Length: 125
Image (cartoon, rainbow, N blue to C red):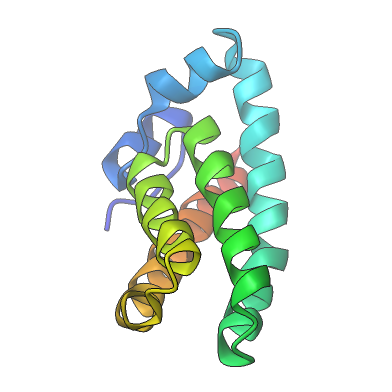
């Protein structure tokens, strides 16, 4: 995977940077602040989501997927946003087989997003 050293490098990791900036009133500085908040939240939410799944707390898991869907859309991580949306609706429809089938892929995508953001801020000046 390509290293993330500047904001434009996020595009190589699946982010739609232009859309993310547009979601932040076209302000790159605000986008960077939102990305930093997404990094901090991701570091907390990844283990929480896994715990919800492992404890079969699907009500909370669905809530977390709803939040993840919106948070990822706001930073241009659209692939993860769509995957979280699929999980959210699988819970709502009580399609736990789909939740089981895709949970690891969603968590891996989330880990990739968090890692990309961590790399970005590690190299930020």
